[in-house]
Length: 513
Ligand code: C2O
Ligand code: CU
Figure 1 (cartoon, protein in one colour):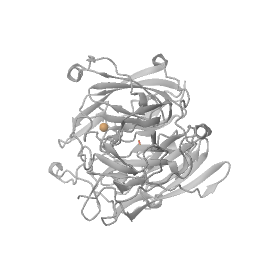
Figure 2 (cartoon, protein in one colour; figure 1 turned 60 degrees about the vertical axis):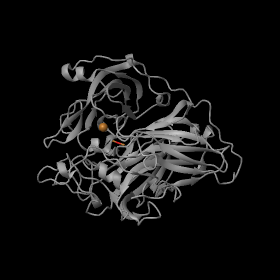
Figure 3 (cartoon, protein in one colour; figure 1 turned 45 degrees about the vertical axis):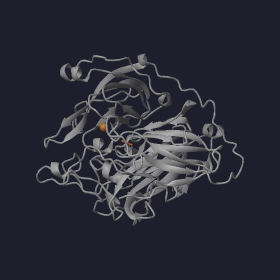
Figure 4 (spheres, protein in one colour; figure 1 turned 180 degrees about the vertical axis):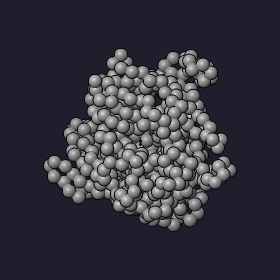
């Protein structure tokens, strides 16, 4: 379906109000609901799933250190919007089709509130998964200012639940952030960027792979979903009217599998001030922002000298990154438009700070353990391609078991052609380097033969991270401090079709010795 671009203005998710707020804690309730919502004014409304019945869900904004309780409630209908593949682990025929569990991505959360994939629940918590512990989640928010996001994580159907609309922003604030005098209030805008494909009747289309359906099973999982339409904050190719001043955008790639390399067609730079996990040391001026699924960037764009102009945010990351097809500039190559048409309502006193704070680099010798973890492509029993971590499946015994209070280096040995964004729950880490190696030699002998020098992380990656791009033919090394909790979490590729189909592993943080 061909849709007119820039027909609708960008929605800005509203802030969720707590049901209770005292000096000790805040309490929220969030209901997941199926509703009809307009994704574009020229097509019929689309049935989506939204937290509080809206897609994206309302933004939860908290102060660092604030104790927050959320009761996430599944009030979705009994029938899923999309077909379930029952050959996928955790989504077998004996499981309810409509299951949900919420993960706060990037949050330092105790295991019982982390949204373990097997901790799913149905309407009214009638049925729950084998790992279900409690109904009300607790978030201590011990982290400094940053943009987290909450999204569904139900085992075997995460790709479908998030595609249906189950995602929202969660912003942590602190006094240091306020002291920086960044653009704020209506000049700070979260942008959830995703790709979707729509049927002519306006409904969401999610493909199946009928030609490869194993007998008796329908439909089959696909190896990655790529939509032909870009949606920002739940609107297709929206526009935003801005004043000629600085704006702060909280960019989030919430796509199932698509990478975005964002740039402005005016040639203006982004002043990147933060990563997934808080501020960089200093702003970096970049012409483009490459974001894998689940990665965030905190950027300032200065429209001061642009009064009267329109600027398009574009994308040129290949579909299947990095080796796929170039994007179509007319569709997936276009994200949204800024119109500098509003009068300046007050003097712009916001600043692009020169320094946000020191980030001590973790040194390699502090690591107690070095794990080499292969990212490999395999074939399942039906001949369908899928991906594994360390050549193990979700149900294999736990092998990653760091001790609380220690640092470890995890080296992701990517032997296939995709760039995989690897996300580790609970922790933030630093990227050490990425080094090319001989993939064939590794596959034949298990030995690493370097084919080039280690590549230092991009300057915009030199802060704390919770998701790391692992390019093909490279070993990507990160150093992770494991604390403060012990217990069971997961790590996985954040391309949702990969995550749902075996590219996810449990890991266990052991008590300190
Ligand atoms: Cu964004 Cu395991 O999640
Ligand atoms: Cu992957």
